[in-house]
Length: 497
Ligand code: AHR
Image 1 (cartoon, helix red, strand yellow):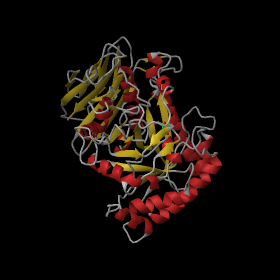
Image 2 (cartoon, protein in one colour; image 1 turned 90 degrees about the vertical axis):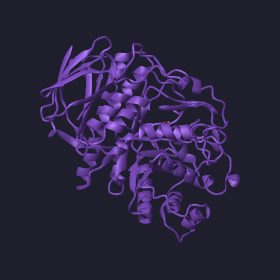
Image 3 (cartoon, helix red, strand yellow; image 1 turned 45 degrees about the vertical axis):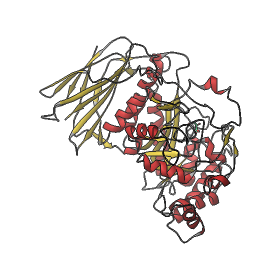
Image 4 (cartoon, helix red, strand yellow; image 1 turned 135 degrees about the vertical axis):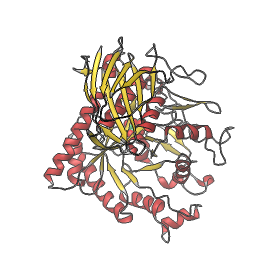
């Protein structure tokens, strides 16, 4: 099979906002306790943060981490997590029905984020609480001093403000599972009024309003339209969340699911632009895809979790090779929408539907999805170009005309590097891609990294890294023509300089 491609410096979509390589840590399962934080572990630092995990997160170069939830934030009292640890209350954590010890809270998380060189995307509770708790938390985290909440922060040992710049106005407020679920009108009003108060406290912040929890919600996309009708001028982003799975074990259909994501992004973009037109606004609304991943492997075992325990092993999906391919395709989709999607968070980062896993008091390892995420984060910074691709196509259960070849290209002007991300979704055949790269005169092939495995269900464990990338991809670059042999079901990173 053959595919053709034209790449040109001038076919620019937009500069990639590096925050599309964000991730997420929720107080859920073993993400915090037993994940990033495990005092007493031989590799933990003086604060109890695991250094092996800090190193793995740094390998991913995660620019921003969403915190503290998730569903958890909708019944969270942030005040429980600050001040002397011995005075912090144990609480019933309602979203996941676990025990929250509050040993880690806002200040500790800010310390951890610094250790991994990330910014924080902080969510406020618009489920059980509202404007007051949100503006107080913002004053606590961002105000320099001389007020009740900023002085309280100082008294807790944090002289300097944390300067959190990105804030989520609640989480999945359309969901019946959410504590304090709201209709779009109820949510739009509270989002607008909370946004107004927060921007009075600190006008430099950016705010994300909740959109629908996924495309399957009955109120999608009306929820977005109504919310933005209320809050368009006060917020800067609308959020999108989506998880996919392969319950029916149909790999061809599964690997096509980023086409649904593509359609989702287009629909939300159109909805934003409709409200923009309706309001005669000059402002463009951007998209924050602040939860995305594969999530289905752990659904059954999660039903057996004992309630009200500390850090139970919840949402511990063990990812296989085909999951890594879909994660790669989703990253490609974000790059293709670099003009509107400015933030995205792989949900989540450690233990909970995560690229990084730990054993309690033991080892840590990289799941299969670690690799496409890492490659995109490291090499996908620059200008997203629009490759013109003609690829053979297939039909699957839910999709028609699925191109076997999924591709996005990032041109880094500063380093003068071009990175081509390519996936071949064909289950049996390799595809030769002929790419015209004439506008990148004098460029040479630096490397062709490949993630491939004969078994789509291969997984990585603490003792066995079965799915790891290699650098022996089969590509040649000769007089402006790149010829790349893209193996069946493979993720490829072709770097030119
Ligand atoms: O990431 C896991 C959960 O998925 C989040 O808490 C919630 O926002 C979403 O439903």
